[in-house]
Every structure is written in C-alpha cells, then in structure tokens.
Amino acid sequence: MATLSTLGLGSGGVLSNDLIDKLKDADNSARIKPIERNQESIKLKQTGLKSIKNLVTELSDLSTKLSDTTIYNSTKTEASGDSVTVQATSSAKEQTIDIDVEQLATRSIKQSYKKFESKDELVGAGTMGLSIDGNNYSIEITATDTLQDVADKISASTDGKIEASILNVGGDKPYKLILKSTDTGAKNEITDDGNGINFGNVSGGEAQDAKLRMDGVLITRDNNSFDDLVKDVTITLDKVGKSKIEIKQDSDKISEDMGKFVEKYNETLELLSKLTNYDADKKVGAVLQGSSEIRGIRSQLSDIFSTAFTSGGKVSEDFGLKIEKNGKVDFDKDKFQETLKNSPDDVKNFFVGEGESKGIFRKFNSELFNIGTSSSGPLKSLKANYDDKSKSLIESLAKAKESLDNKYEIMQKKFAAYDAVIGRLKNSSDYLTSIIEAQYAK
Image 1 (cartoon, rainbow, N blue to C red):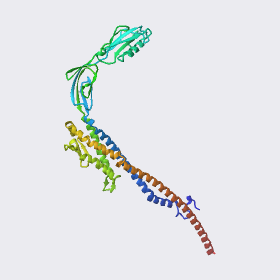
Image 2 (image 1 turned 180 degrees about the vertical axis):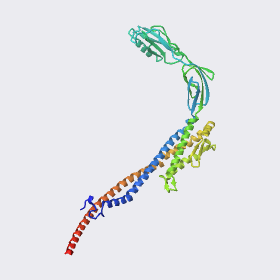
Image 3 (image 1 turned 90 degrees about the horizontal axis):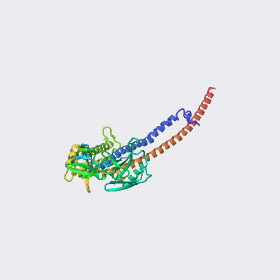
Image 4 (image 1 turned 135 degrees about the vertical axis):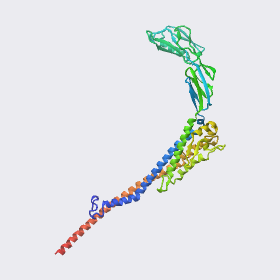
C-alpha cells in the first residue's frame, strides 16, 4: 500500500495530495468560509452596538445632570478687592454687596515674663488663676511640677478655652510659657491673677472683635466668618480693606453643559445613521442596515426635541435649540443665556418640567434608560441576540472543521489504498506486456 508521502506514485500522479488539497479547498470555500463571513459580520454588529451603547451612556450622564433644577439656579461670585471671601449657594439671589473690613477678630495671646532653662525646670508650688469669657480657673501647681506639667494642666483645666504651649525664643534661658485663647473675640481675652507665673500681652495679641461695614452699616462680631448676614451667602473676613462682591447667575456653566449635550446628541444621531445607511451607488448596506431597532432609537430621540413645547407655546428653538433638516440640533448659546436670564422659570419648566409634567431632559432620562439599560430595551436585546449567534457560529465552525478534517483524513487513506491497487495492477500489466512482447519476439 502506498504511504501518504508517496501518494500518487501508483496512479501516476492522478490520486495525489495536491488533488486532495484542491478538493479540501473547494469544500472549505463552500462550508467554512460562509461561517467565517457570518462571524465577521456579527463581530462588526457587536462593535457597532458597543459604540452606540457608549454614546447613549455619555448622553444619559449629561441628561441626568441637566434634569436637576439646581443647575439652573447656579450662581457665581465676582469680587473686586481681597479683604473677604464669599461663598454663595445656588439659592442665593443676584445682588451686589459692599464690604469695608475695619478690623479682624483676633485671639488673646500671652507670654510669661519669666524665662526657663528647660521644659523640665521646676516651676514651684502655688495656685495660678486664669480668667476667660466670664469663667475663672484655678490651676494647682505642686513642688514637683515642671514647666511642661504646668502647660499640660492649663490646657486640661480650662475646658478647651485656653491652649498652653512652650516656645523656644532663644538666649540663655530660651523657654517661655505661651497662652492662646481657642476662640477669637474680645470676650476671650485671657487675664491672670499674678500668682505663680505672670503673663504679659504679645504685640498684636489682644483679643478683639471683628468690625466691618456692609453697605455702610457697622457690624461687630466675635469671629471672622458668618452666614447670617446675607441669605444663602457665607462671608469670611481675610484682611482689613474694602471689597465689592457681585453674586450673579452662572449661565456659563449650564451653557457649557447644554453645549456638551447637543454635541453628544448630534454625534449619536450621526453614528446611528452611519451604521444603518445603504449606499445605493455601491449597493452596500452598513453593518446594521435593516435593523428596525436601531432606526427606532434615532426616531425616539429626535421626537423628544421636535415634539417638546411649553404651556405658553414655546418650542425648542425659542430656547436656542434649532432642529436642522438632518435631525441634528444647532445650539445658540447667546439665545439660550438671554432666555435663561429673562425667563428662568420657562427654561426650568421646558428642560426639567414640574411635578408630573416632564421636561425635555426628564424625557431623555426615561428614553435613554429604556434604550440602553432596560433588559427589554433594544441595545440589550440586540446584544443578547448577537452574543447567541456568535456562540452558535463558534460551535458550527468547530463542527464543520472537524467534519472536514475527518472527511479528508478518510479520503487520503482511501486514495492511498486506491493508489496502491492501481500501482499493483500497473505492475502486473507491465509484466504481462513484457511476456507477450517476448513471445512475439521469438
């Protein structure tokens, strides 16, 4: 029997490995290639679907942001002068505030007249009396108490109102005992009774109240930050001086977010068209051409803009969103900001809605959830369908290849057997021919 490596010798090259390869290639084209083409098609559909999903997710994030009423109330502060810092909440009204800071609230800071050689130096027994904010404190000092012990006792015995520390000021006896009031304001001036360690004021260390004039009115407070002078505004005093504060509507921020949404919306429509278009000249359809689910997504999104209107009859274009013939939206920032300034309630009602009545972005939230997140939505349904087809094609391809390999393994063995038989017959024929020729030769 002919071996596989010598296949064709017996048949004179008729039954050869080359013939088997050609037959296998033909079978491969008929059975394997269609499955592989289907696999490539499914992969392209899955890639296109993933691109749509990513854009829908980004669009949903922006829509969620723009469906929050607080963004339409956003404010910003502008200041001339650096004597104060102002923070305004989204509920703050537009206004101008003139502030003249005459003095800041400060803490009481005292230093011991006596200097000490070390933190461990013994102070001497006695009773130290300290007063602050109407409270009197007696600190008992024993004969074994060091300077550090005294500092610790003061901090522990004054209900957190006085902080005691030791400071190295230099010199032969470098250590001084320092007292600081925890809070600012004149009522927090520290006084001592002169027993034990005596204290004096540090330059600029007198406790005092803050004084400022707001729109000309004198205000005195024991601290430098307050939120009860102007509703929804916190004012912090930073230094002596004059400042003018303007609280304005922050239309730039919401305009920026609106512009981003329109850009992403147009990008989404363009991708949906690109993936479902049919090229009549080339007679070639896009990867998702023919998908009613994907075409439906474009219609669902377009309808939200084209059918929206207020109770007063205003439509998208009245708020700076003009719908073009191709379905895309052109955003007029100036017109949007003008409408936001002159008719803020109309803007909020149109884009957010009120009560059960949904504005554009609340509608987008619902629609985008149904499209991209809902288990019964088109994107998840199509993904599941394509995943199932991909899995089925992988199994079909494996079975087809196995079947083809088995078929040609058997064929090769049969060809080898046929080739051997043909070779033997040929040898017998050659032998008989030689005998006959030898007989005629006699």
